[in-house]
Length: 535
Image (tube, rainbow, N blue to C red; front, side):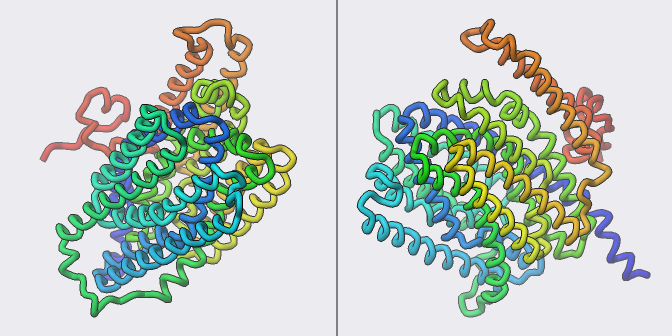
């Protein structure tokens, strides 16, 4: 009986503690991510308005191919490393930990150089380059250097999430990186430079970011005493285990490539740079719906992997649903903005020449929000080692998206790309949710949190009705050049978002996660909890 008690008790206590710790750390990253995304969004808007539509299309096309090169160079190590390093650190297997790290960095260096040399070679063989015109070919020759740089960046971010405090990640990802990009675009505009300058600026900014990573990780390993445990002679590199785990996960890269780059490549092939620009211009705005999702990702895998290593299934379940609820509720304002108000947002940000892209923004925003609201189903499957399910789901989604794009893009151009990508994203997420239930036993929709989804759905529908009711009045009046109807819609979106937060505050357990705010009387009244007693 004593053994049974010892085995069960951690499950009851570790679950809320792990969820609370993960959410607190991720909330700091959310603040940083919000600031970084705002800066990156400003950079994108300035870039779109400064460049011609053809130049922006060529730049976006080259970046899409760079994304493909980055996926090849990364070889799935950015996702594998967080799971293995967390488990090895939990069990004190430091020779194996360093072996995994050395193997991962070596793979990226080798594949990154191969990607760069391959693209340079193919460019030399093709008179007009891989992208079909001389300007695009020059851009690709420069930007392809980002493939290995971004691959190293992704893996080092994973290492930092395992060992570092959220503050270190905050500094590197959300202060240094966006600041460098903003500096590049400011210099571009002030110097009246061309798109080639922008490409070189991105490469230099990436290199500076790697130097900052090296400094942060070197200091972190020294403080934690990890360098003292490093021995070349005793390195234990689990090559077979890493490869067998990573290769199936490459299907996740396949899905990413197909969903995020095939549309641009096929649009460029069948339609040209302007159609690429019409579709890709709204991707950052639609991606706002993954702001909270991407902020919570960094700390979720290490936290879930440690719970999995302790066989704390209840802890994983609690961590999963608490994280999903936070992401769903705090992503809602951005969903309301980019879905319900897509038309006004598109015209305001990018100008009338991109007004036709509003429909694409609404469609993609819906798909991205569904992905966020359902939580980390794919990441949880990875933590559980459910490789067969991951492969089957990813291959099905990739095949579906590629088939839809090949049929719809030649017929409908950017609209076909939007339909294919939106459909594939939703189907992919539903399949992952079903797989999560079958593999881990985590319910499709936990009854404790079903209320949250009902409230969110009601809020979204109410905003759509408000927009439909105000539509006949659009353009009838303005304030400082801004359509009055748009101002009213923004106010309604803010009000509905606050109502959603108010009606779901019990499920979010905000007072338990951030007990320090309960010292304020207004917070006590809103969250309905008593402040903790002072010791």
